[in-house]
Image 1 (tube, rainbow, N blue to C red):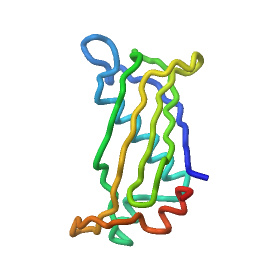
Image 2: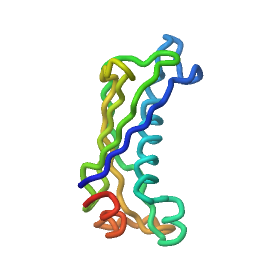
Image 3: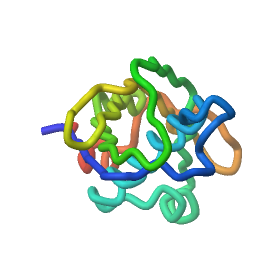
Amino acid sequence: MSASYEIQMKVAFHDMDPLQVVWHGNYLKYFDVARFGLFAARGIDLYTYMLEKNFAFPVTRTSLKHIAPLRAFDEFICRAAVTEAQYKIGMSFEIRKLGSGLLCAKGTSEQLAVRYPEMEMEFAIPDDIRQALGF
């Protein structure tokens, strides 16, 4: 079964833009918090993995659809789910307001495996990472 993870968060005042909604770039930050929570829940520390096994996993593609705005101090759930982990790590994300479940944003990301420090692309995700992510 592929991995998924949810985290409850609250919009901080400093995440707002002049229109008093969450600045668009902060949604990717929220996705990243959920991404790293998912990895941690599966026993994966990407920084330690890079140092010990000489693999890094840079994000190479993202997409984000804004649906309804988050505002100051809104509480929300950010969900990350692994959609593939053979040749790349594909993830999907959703942000929903706590309580109402209103979908505010959704998106995707892709990460590739690269040899570190050379940054040469590999054509498969290492088996231990793939298995930890449920593939």
